[in-house]
Each structure stands twice: as C-alpha cells, then as structure tokens.
Image (cartoon, rainbow, N blue to C red; front, side):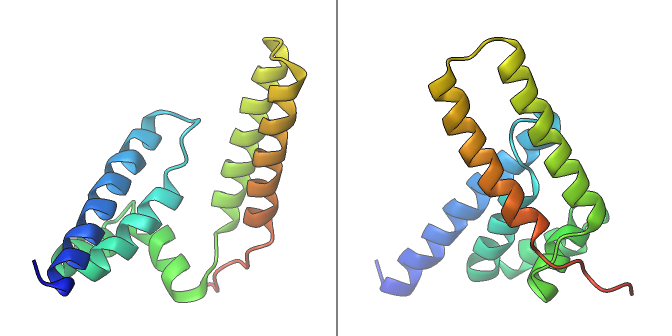
Length: 126
C-alpha cells in the first residue's frame, strides 16, 4: 500500500469514527458533539472532500465546524451550552456520591475543558 493511500485510509477511519461519536453525542449529553465533528471535518478534509463539503454545508452541523475552521472560534451559545452541561454532569456526580478522587479527576478534566472553551474567541457576526 502506498504511503498516501495509507494516510487517506487512516484519516477516513478517524473521520468516520469521530462522526459516529459526534452523532451519539447529540443524544448523550455526557459526550461532546462539536469536538468530534471538528475532528471528523479535519479527517474528511484529508480523505474525502465530498463528505467534508457535505459536513461543512450541513444546516445544523456545519456552522460550528465552519466557525472553528475559519476563526478558531466558538459561538457564545455553544460556550454556554457546553459549560452548563459540564456543570450539570459534575453536579450529578457530586449528588450521587462519587468518590472524592473520581470527583477530583472529573473536576480537573471538566475544568480544563471549560477553561479552553470559554477562552476561545467568538466568531464575528456575518
């Protein structure tokens, strides 16, 4: 197998896996949708331009991906939704009485993700 064919197949596998996880994340609030869709778009850009274009032009899925690709930005609505979901998930973990070590790990991971999200710029109004 040629080197370029290997990488094309590799990125296709990453893209399809990420797209599947992103769709699951639409229904499971503990699984983030947008990062997986951004990764899927990245993979499809390297393996299948037709699907990449479909994903970018999709009326619901495309705008956050396009904002990230063009501006490395996250909309205010997406920031609020993401951070609120993280806070709810962490609160549930506290309420069900998870071990403090697990809460510390979860808090550190969610806190780091929330910090990353809120420090990204907001896309310009178009």
